[in-house]
Length: 460
Ligand SMILES: CC(C)(COP(=O)(O)OP(=O)(O)O)[C@@H](O)C(=O)NCCC(N)=O
Image 1: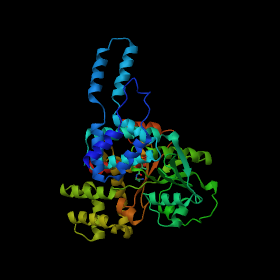
Image 2: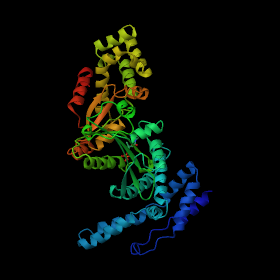
Image 3: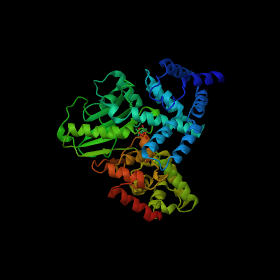
Image 4: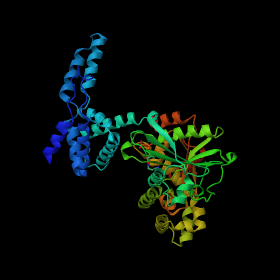
């Protein structure tokens, strides 16, 4: 088995031509790429890991060659610029990993790009599950990602609007891929492409019929604060749209479908492209916003409650008054049992059946959620992945909405709260740069107000 891995690699990963022959040597026969692809697809997961480790380790950059040229470049300092550029170009060429050529050859055969997208998905899986984080594998991943970013650049992507007239296989894929608000039946998907709705996908010529990333939009009078009104509404499915009722575009679900295209920023490009599309259809439209879930808030809150209980700082999360409410409603004695009672209520979503608790917990849960989104960080960026995505795009953390998602999932995941990340078109590039470079989060008065209430009561 091993020698066949070695054999296949030696045979299919051709050596880099010399610098002089770099543009003159003919590509290897297509059969090379096809043999590599067939062999790789025949491997089990763990064998693929072994195979890719060999490929990245033994068929990467010729380090000796690169260091010789680096030394040569140092020697040519002070020489005329033409000589320096010459040697720099030789050095640049010597830093090309041998496998990079194989990847470009594969991309030219039928199904090659899709193969490479799926191969990168394997690389990402190996890296994220920490079963292999060798520097060579990281190099292979970044080489492949940069090639994919070129092949899937926005100019080569096609925007497709999905309607009830789209082919069944596309509608079926859209339903399958929907990651945020699962589609339950035909009526569901018919509504999502029906009146006051738009559904767009990016496709690519190398992967025909495959939506790469899908965006669902609701056309509303003003910025939506509730998802049930969008995914549950029994709008007559054949009504004509009344343009006077359309002033805002609400992005209520976005999903990328190819794990191997992670980091290629397709979702960001699709949102910007759809905004342009809607502006041409509705020139007066001026409000563009997401209505986003807040996955992870409930579990973060449970952790915070546990932490504060241990450190006896429970009053920093809820005020005395708020704790008393919890004690009254749950009939618990003052102090720690109230905190346990609250954790159980949150954990079982029971509190949603008590109008009194819904009313009394709103201020506390809203300011805790504002802090979770705005204050909690991972390597300096927003901890919540959906917040991080929209903030990278340059959106403003615009409005937290109480009771925005009263479905069991919405209550369990984020105590029913949802957030609008609003796209102020003139500000997105400035906001994105400020976030990416200085980790600055652009937030509205409502959000900043909730955050400062939290900070006052918890002296954070
Ligand atoms: C939110 C999504 C679409 C962002 O994808 P994309 O723009 O390609 O970002 P990236 O993967 O290039 O970082 C993607 O992360 C996704 O599908 N997430 C799961 C569903 C969701 N909307 O959270």
